[in-house]
Every structure is written in C-alpha cells, then in structure tokens.
Image 1 (cartoon, rainbow, N blue to C red):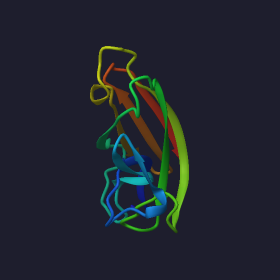
Image 2 (spheres, rainbow, N blue to C red; image 1 turned 90 degrees about the horizontal axis):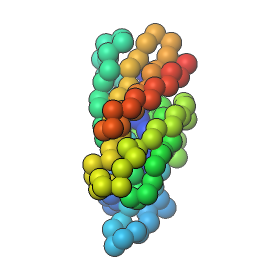
Image 3 (tube, one colour; image 1 turned 120 degrees about the vertical axis):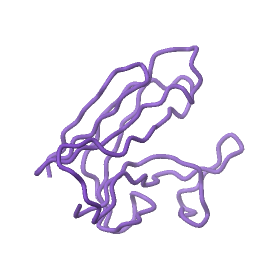
Image 4 (cartoon, rainbow, N blue to C red; image 1 turned 180 degrees about the vertical axis):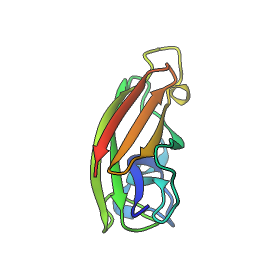
Amino acid sequence: MPYTYGVSCTMDFNAERHSIEHRFEDGGRLWANNAFRKHVTRGQAVKLGEWIVDKDYFPESDDQTSATIYVFASDKTDTNHITDEGCQFVGQFDVEFPRTVAKPIARKAVTEAMRFGGTELEVKGTSNGGETYKKKIKF
C-alpha cells in the first residue's frame, strides 16, 4: 500500500500517543478527539478485492442513531491524529446504529471494513442489526 488508511474517531486518551490539544474530559474519562484509527499500514501487502480489518465503532451516547465515518490516508506508517502532517481526507459515508432502546451502547456497534481495488477504496459498515452501508472512494 502506498498510504496508511484509517478513520477519524474519538478514543481513550493515551499521553504517549495523543496530542494534548485533542484531549477532553467527559464522564470522568479522558478522551482523544480527531484520533486516527489505522486499518491498513503503508507498505502492507493487501489482496485486491478482499475485505480487510474489521473494526467496531460505537455511538457516543444511548440516543445516537447515526454517524458519519471519515476516511483518511497518511504518508506515514504511524499517524496519531487526522490533523498530523501528511494525513489527508479521502472520503466519508453515513451509517445508522441499530434502532433499539433496549441495547446498551456496547451492543450497538457498527463494524467497518475496507477493500482495495486498482483505482478505488470501498468502505463497508455493518450494524449488528444486519444493515450494511458501502461507499466507493476513487483515488
């Protein structure tokens, strides 16, 4: 791969990894905003047309019903934030979380995967309600 690909997300703050300017506190926990969550690393061998790296993403609150997934590419192998030098926005798509009041946040995940073609990246989000959302991003 010529780039490292990942998505923007909020995750637990790690002082060794995350910039203080992206740190915030909520519910007694420290979080990192605009964090780069890696799916594929620059230089990694990837089979064309194969779905890779399923990762779960969760709503920020019980009443959140949808989210926009922002996909980024970086010319570095270990990017920490989407604002880091060499990191660029490549596309976005919307997903809906399962519509149920009974499920706690941890059970309302959307699983994301990426598939690379010759001139495009396809991103797929699947809710645990079974709905699948796909977006093709041209290079």
